[in-house]
Amino acid sequence: MTFPDRARRLPAASGRPVCARREAAPALFRLLADSALSRAALSACGLPLALVDADGPGRPVTYVNAAFEGLFGYREAEVRGRGVVDLLFRGDDALAQRLFGEPASRWKLPAWSKDGAALQVEAAVGAVRAADGRLTHWVLGIVDRSELESLRAEIAALRSIPDHAPNRDGELSPGH
View 1 (cartoon, one colour):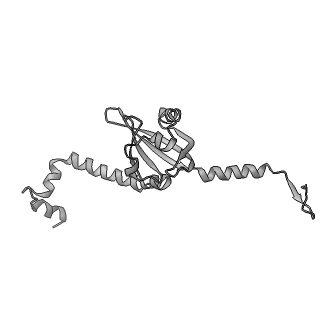
View 2 (tube, helix red, strand yellow):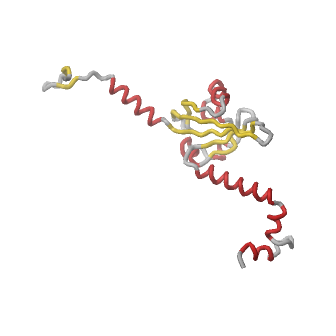
View 3 (tube, rainbow, N blue to C red):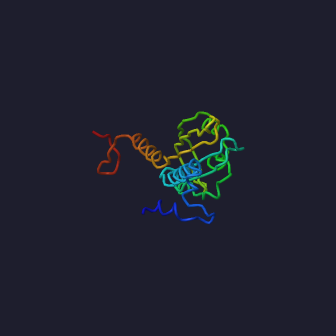
């Protein structure tokens, strides 16, 4: 006898077989299973993610994953309910209008961590809609580009140095 067969025969506290609950509400069971799977996938993602309430004042954060916590230094409990624009973009409403005004957009922009460190990030925004088509949430995916932008600045600075080599006296002389 397999586990599900045994479970059908074992009564739960309600006196009904355990699996009868699942059969009585298959849509609810499937919804809860899908919800748990979605939450686990978001949590396991290595890309910093935030879910933002599209209807709430100030676009409050409803969820962040561990990668978000690692990049910005905020725990989920610290950010839940706080406006994402105030939290990461220092209240720049013009930036927020651009960021959330174009669904499926990607932006390179400055952001700030909890400790005040400036970051260069690329933010990708996607709309989440209810079954009736109403916008309910934004998904904000973030990539830290700070190191890349720093390296680009270094390369540009190196390219601007004249091509001269020091002579025996340590003075610069024209290169070949």
